[in-house]
Image (cartoon, rainbow, N blue to C red):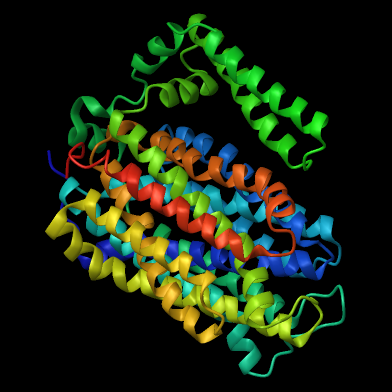
Length: 498
């Protein structure tokens, strides 16, 4: 059986929830460095304070993916229970976040907010693959990317808009301005309402219908990856654990930034988790979540492995951008380093506008440029071209000092952003077994999260060692990362089924 073809209204309803998710995500990305600095964080502390975001994604998305593949709550469905639970928690976090008065509380609320966003976000990726036939995957992810772009424009521009409406954009030292507070409150409402729209206007296919659509691929508990895991020795686990301990020893010996301990813990932790998973698989614990997650990670399809390297470099650049755009723009384009100054706050608002332009371009590119480019050169080559365009946008930060001129940089970055949000997922949805789409989408997120954790762990040391007080050079690192992602994409062309 073939899934029914969705009309435009169906595509709209399937993707609409991402509007609110991205509003929350954009508010977080554009304002957390500003909030941290306002509450007393130093520039070198920003990467480790941002660690909450990738760590929660690393832990939450594979678990939610695994669980949603195996969930069926009748009329509420498979993925929608997670949309709704995440939306409620995220809305509450957005209401509470701007009330932070001390740094540690804002960091805690970032953990809560990012975990909640990930609970909603991960099943949405698999939801498109569940609901659409293969020849509509690209269209489904393009519509989703459109809502991501629109939501990001709204979320990023809220403080700027409120400032122009007369809401106070400055506050006494150590207090968050009203423009940011009211923006987070509006974002919480938008998050909940938009996700609720998708929950109420869609009907998921039952397990029986999915089995009819997918045939043998509908068997979620395929033992293949567990057998693969059970056949592995413990040498690899020992190597990972040993590498983590070695990194920790180097940090202690040479007095490196303490954030590097996070990298050490991540590497050693994977070694330990893989050893436990192998033991469980050998013992025949076929229903164990950890064994399934590690087994599916070890048994990723070839296309997913190659796309993983592309994602690694793509998201390294994005996390560098989110952490450093505010200090770069406020310092170099507005001359403001004092967080209580009007110049700094004006620059912070302009960062919101830059991100809004970037995401507005992404929304338009998703529905216009990407389909045209994909038709002409294929999805893989289209993604390569877009990544190179974005790399040029990052490189231009080193040359420009006029805030208005940075709009051109953001146009280039926005084109790449649109492709990153759509192309890899369209390729995956058409080349992965449908019964494991949730867990594979969750595992694919690891290659979004790991580079972010590496940036968090190493960026403070890099800034301190090579360009103390001169963050503009982080944009050069971002440009290089996207150039490497484009190079890695050449390995994917010819491997995909569309």
